[in-house]
Each structure stands twice: as structure tokens, then as C-alpha cells.
Image (cartoon, rainbow, N blue to C red):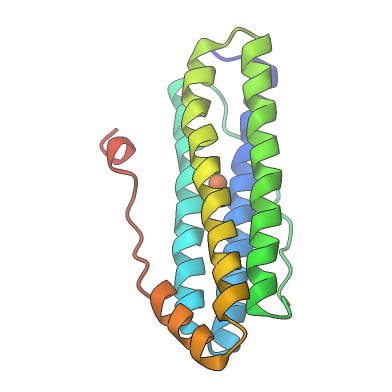
Length: 172
Ligand SMILES: [Fe+2]
Ligand SMILES: [Fe+2]
């Protein structure tokens, strides 16, 4: 069983994860538009990761006999000025998401909801990686992206990212 308040919090976060997916898909389109197809690929994979996050919460709510309520997703921006700004925005966004995940964790602790606490730990760990990756790529853009050659090489590297669903959870 899961409390009404926790159900609301998770439904809200399903929406936030879908917004993240939407935001990264919008960034992917922007990157294609400015001829950075590798960046676009990276963002499209990121879109899939965020959809995976949303579905993970969706499945959890249903497993717990909760009610899934899909909420309206905001329109993401579609103009991002530069590749550097794309990753600056990504890092800022992921930091916000980390705060949201922490709030759900706090609620799980307050409610002594051990199941949700354990479930949400996966997301706490995931956010460490999300922030670190965004920060790392932003740093690479700052160091190498200033020259067309550097940006070209970085684009080629980001073009190699392939979506792989997390192994441990894919089997669930
Ligand atoms: Fe996410
Ligand atoms: Fe994320």
C-alpha cells in the first residue's frame, strides 16, 4: 500500500520525468538543426533514458496498487543559443530533478514508507550520474568546443552513445 500523498508525489514525478524527456528531445532537434548530429544523438538517447525513468515510476505505482494519473506536460523551450548552452541548461535541469527526488525521499522517510524509500534509492544514485555526466560534457565543450575541430571531435564522440536499458531493472 502507498499513501495518497505519496501517490501524488510520484504521479507528479512521472510528469517531471516525461518533461525531462520532452526537454531533451527538443534539445536533440535543436542540435540537428545546428548540424551537430552527434549531440543530437546523445540527447535522443537521453530522451529514452528519461522515458525509462517515467515508466519505472509508473510500474512501481501500479505494483503498489496505486493510481497512475498522467498530468499535463509543459512545453519545453526550442531555442537554445549554442551547444554549450544546451549542456548548461541540462546541468541546471538535472540539479532541479535531484532536488525533486530528494523531496520524495524525505516524504518516504517521514511516512516511514520503506518500500518507496528503497525504490527511490535507485533514482538518488542515478542523479549523481546524471549531474556528473552533464557537468563533464559541459566542461569538454568549454575546453574543446571553442574551435571547430574540437567541436567536431566532440560531436563524433557523442554520436557514439547507444541507449541501453539498465540491466538489473530491465529483467524486472
Ligand atoms: Fe530522470
Ligand atoms: Fe535525468
